[in-house]
Length: 268
Image (tube, rainbow, N blue to C red; front, side, top):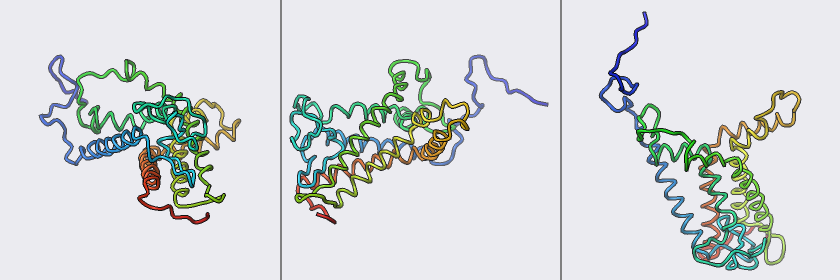
């Protein structure tokens, strides 16, 4: 016979236990590490974006992705491949044309939503752990309704990835012509990882094959959908890897521009 537990009128539909959670593992570790990791990255990126120097190595045409495309009137003319038309101000990043869209793409990313919802907002901090909020309205109200802009932020991210790829191509340069060094390796690894992260996006997967009713009638799109689906399973890892490659690329170019070390050259 099946029985139904009774509870007082108006009580929350939870098991009648005194503990807030029955979990005995270190469920709090993942949210804490996420807060530390994201906070450290945002602090570094913010500092570098508004530093407005040590972003360009003219000898090898290395441009840090935090300043690409460099469109401020304060940009080094050689680094401004797409022109300079944004006012030069300490409050306006040199790459103000792209950074807002990249920020929107990351903020609305399905994985990052999970990451900061659980870690910063405790909503909920982990499976089987109570939510830190008394009410839940989903993503239907301001400001979370803007999470629905992820599809459009994805289009912008694709365009910016193309620009980063162009930067990597232009960096195959030395004072005497074609060149290739450690900086090129770092730039290309970053670009490849950025493309992998962008292609693994849930929006990309849906755009490619989400609305197909007959895969057999669209073999090319089906093959692409299968490839993107495999990447999509690694979306979380790629999200963190690209944060690391972006910071590493920027730090390496900053060190070169500051004269802290020399680029290891293989050709040129």
